[in-house]
Length: 447
Image 1 (tube, helix red, strand yellow):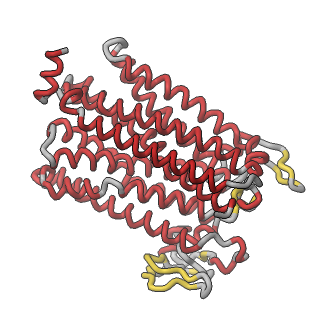
Image 2 (cartoon, one colour):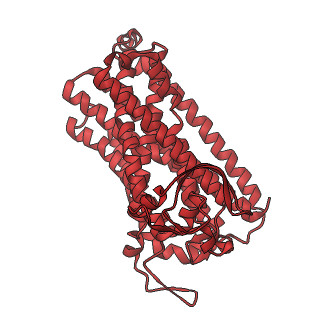
Image 3 (cartoon, rainbow, N blue to C red):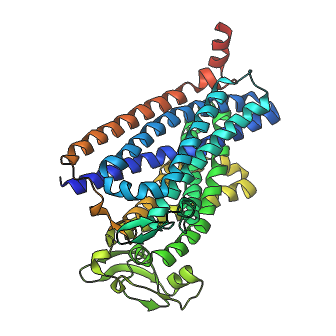
C-alpha cells in the first residue's frame, strides 16, 4: 500500500470509529441526566435504576472515547507533521480547551458514579448534567479545529509563512458555527435512534418491559429533536458550504455545469470523464433555492474549477445522497411516532412500531459517517483549504501501511470489547437496575 494512501486510510478509520464514540459521549449523559431528573421529580425507583444503568454505559464509552481520541492526537503529529508544523500554533487553542473540557468531564463522571447517597441530590444531578455539557463542549471544540481546515482564518499567509496569528479568529472561523450546529444535531439524532432501537428490541423480547419502555420513550424524545432539527441545521451548513467551498457543493450534487435555476439531483451515477451524471432524478430550480433562497440564482459547476482541485466527485456525491436518504427516513419514522403518540396511542405498544425503531438503530450513525465523509473528502485535495495540499503534509517516514494494520487491529479490538461490555450491561438490568424484577429483589435481600 502506498504510504500516502495508508496515512489517509488510517486517519479515515480512526475518525470513523472515534466519531461514534464522541457523539455518544456528547449525548448519552443528557439522557442519563434526564432520567435522573425524572427520578428526583417522581421518586420512581425505575428511573433511578435507568439512570444507574445509563451512567455505567456512559463510563464505558467515555473510557473508549478517551483511548480513541488519544490515538487520533498522536496520529496528527505522526502522519501529518507538515500540517502540524504550520497549523498547530494557529488552531492550538480549541485543542487546549478541549483538553480542559475532557478533564472536567472526567471529574464530573467520577463524582456522579460515586456520589449516590453521598452528595446533595441536586448537586449530584448537576454532576451528571455537567458530564453532558463538558462532553458537548469537547465535541464542539474539536469541530472548531476541523472547521478551520475548511475555512482557514486568523493568520496572514505571506511567501509560504503563517504570520500575524490570531487564535481567537481562527477558532471562531466562518465554518465553525454551521459545522458545530449540524454535528451536534446529528449526534442527538444518531444516539437517540441507537438507544431507542436497543430498548425497543428488549421490549419486543418481553424483558423488563416497564424499565425498557421508559428508556425507549426518553431516547425517542431526543432522537426526534435531532431528526427534525437536522434539515434546519443542514440548510445552514449547505448555505455556508456554497459560500465558502462552491466546489464541494458542486461535488455533493455532481453539478458539472454552471447554470441559473440549478436542479437538485436525487440519486444518479456521476461520470467524471464525460462530466455528466446518469440516471438522476432532477428537481428543477431547487438547488438554487436551497443555496440562496432564489429559484433563479446561479450555482457554479465543477467545470468552473481546475480539474486538479476537484474532490473525488462520486465519493462525495454518494455520501451526500446516503446522508439525505437516511435523514429523510428518520424524519418519516419521527412523524409516524408523533402521530401515534397524539392520535393513536394503541400503536405505541405495537410490535411493528418497535420493529421500525429496531431496524433504524444504525441509521443515524450511517448518516453521520456519510456526512463526515462529505465534509472531509469534499475538501480534498486540500488539508488546509486553498493553502496546503494533503499530499504535502504527509510524513516522509516509510512503512505507514504497517501502522495502518496495527491501528485497524486496535480499533476492531476496542469495538469488540465495547460490544461485550454494553451487552453485559443490558443482561444485568434484571439483577442490578430494575427494582420491579424479582431477581433484583433477591439480590438485594442476599446483600
